[in-house]
Amino acid sequence: MRFRDSVVWVTGASSGIGEELAKQSHAEGAKVVLSARREDELNRVAAECNGPEETVVLPLDVTDEAAITSAAEKVLSRFGRVDVLINNAGLTQRARIIDTAMSVYRQVMEVNYFGPLALTKAVLPSMLECGKGRIVCVSSVAGKYGSPMRSGYNGAKHAVHGFFDALREETQGSGIDVTLVLPGAVKTDVSINALRGDGSKYDRMDSFLESGMSAAGCAARILTAVHLRQREVLIAEGIARRNVWLKRISPALLSWSMRRRKPFRTTVTGNRPT
Image (tube, rainbow, N blue to C red; front, side, top):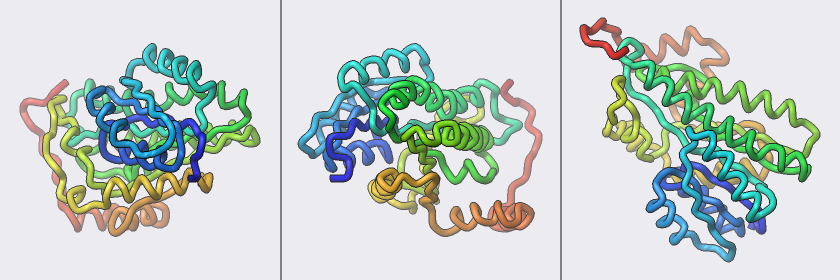
């Protein structure tokens, strides 16, 4: 019961990793606040939580700054504090740079960067006042290296790393811990919900995700990292894990190996989004 009596707020809690984080932290004694856009799915997850403490369903669009402020006020009014904030909501993209509309880039950035930034800022003052708290951002190995067809996602996740690394340094000695989580391939609907270059739904399961680790296994490792107050945790195996280390040791070798594994050619098309 590592999170007994803790107030844990999870975004993106309606499915995948977020759903498992909510269920597992609740099973370990936490009072869990579940947030995402789909209220019906949040209610399902809340009903499936097993544990002695309560769950709170709080629908939230992390791109709506006013809604974030209101949601934080509701949580703090109810519990008086947030012990663990897990920024997990995310959105990815599947399109070449030349074919991706600026509106898609902005949407991906709003969900993956400005969303966790705004929610963290809404909760941070109360954590500083309490003199304790844990802020978690579920990033990705995409925050460490770039790959074709995911430029918007790569850019947003790289930005996330810069922000939360800075936050960790600014809050040093305040009792607040900041954990960045870097999952690799996890079997979720993230690619199905991805955006194409024109903003339409990708609606396909990537093969590497189909064979990825389970959301439950990933969530368990995340919660262990949070409990141990780790600064950064890489939850990836195989090629994704290798690529993170290659990026650090030899970016040129990483680029060479990625091109050998999956050739990629950029071709100018006639009808590109603007």
